[in-house]
Image (cartoon, rainbow, N blue to C red):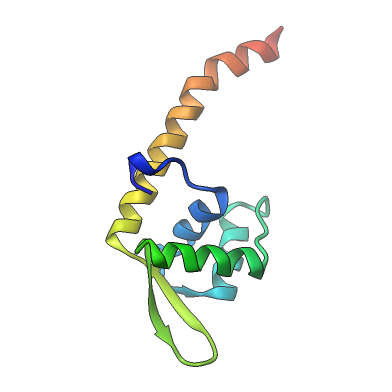
Length: 106
């Protein structure tokens, strides 16, 4: 998800946020719901599809597989990608802030 690869999906962004601490699948889903204050509820199909993609792109890594559950964590490359996406999203909000607020006053 480097700057030349385009924006992340919402699912990718929230999974990387959740993996700032090592977590297994169910804990990732619970963390996403908590981080988003219930706005984002991710199902297992979406979660495991995105985890697979993020692992292939080396943005996350498998920490532990005890046969019952797998624990993942964000990599250094993943943290950089997360920071880039955060900056991109912050710029989007900044760009629209005055315009959206002005339209609401009319």
